[in-house]
Length: 110
Image: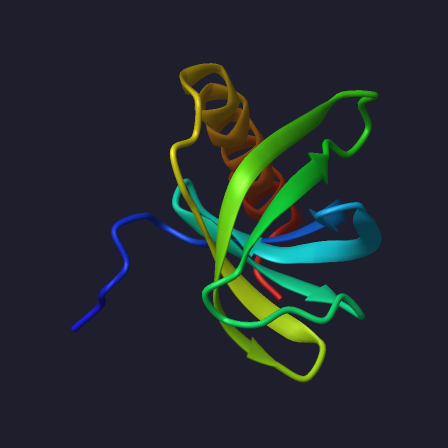
C-alpha cells in the first residue's frame, strides 16, 4: 500500500541546501507537495531540519522551504518532508510540479 499522500514527479531542479550557516548545492530529483528526494554532497542525518531553496528552471525565482525535515539518507541521496509550508510557497511548489508533469507528458515517457 502506498504511504505517500502526495504524487511524486521526477524533476531535475537545482537546489540550495542550508543547515545553520552551511550551504551546499544539490538537485531535487523527485518532488511532491509533501517533500523531495535530493542528490547532493551535503551530509545530513535523519531527523535534522534544513532549509531547501528550489531554483525554478527557466526563471529567476526560487521557492524557499525553510523547514524541511530529513527522513532518510543513503550515500549522496536523501529524502526530506516539508514542514509548515506557507500558502504562497505551497502555491509556487504546486505550479512547479504541474509544469514538470506537463513537460514530462510533452516529452513522452522514457
